[in-house]
Length: 201
Image (cartoon, rainbow, N blue to C red):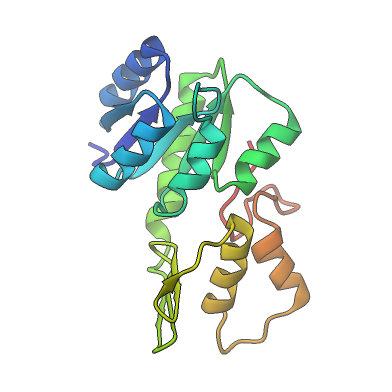
């Protein structure tokens, strides 16, 4: 058993059924949402380990749902879509997705991407917290309070803050800063994802 819960978000019942059967047969617990708003509520209530999120959904797109889910969810988000342009991938990764899978996809590849994403998320050390009379930063929950007031940051702004907190007390070069914050979604020359955890599909 994998002991991981995966949230499948797709407006097509047939896709949800196929993914549920496939993931369940590979030892995962599966929960479902049929739209972005339901996914946001499910994340808060069920706290899944990983999310498979369809991009093309009515009312709230998967991209919008991804950016909202990222405000309270630190685990891996894999976008699933029929769109294969570089621009679409960049937008999804910049909004907080960890990976991007194009339909139709091979089940073996999807399962491998899920295993890799879960390995990365479980191998990371707990993120530090900052608590002072005027500032509270909870990197795990992606919460920032200044003088008791909640501050909402864009994904890139949060990545910059995360890097500064993690590197506190250490020299921070321009190259390190660009790689860790603005480089979300980029790959190193050897093809591995950057430390910011945003591999390209």
